[in-house]
Amino acid sequence: MKGCRSTKDVRKDGVHLVAQLRDMLEIDGYELLDVEIWDPQTGERFGWHDLRTQKAERNGGK
Image (cartoon, rainbow, N blue to C red; front, top):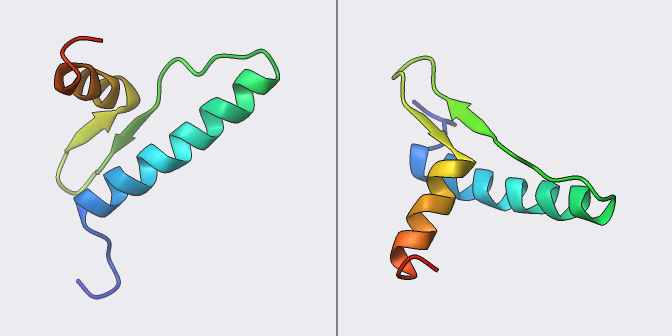
């Protein structure tokens, strides 16, 4: 569909926005615990916790 973003773009942009939100909240002493994005058309879901897990796996569990 014209003008729609791919799941890859949504994930990339979502990671950036979540990182910004997390940083803003930490400045005020809050912690971001969970964020989830759901595509009602495909049923696909991904969350911030999923992205942290993937990053940890790439970095050898660190």
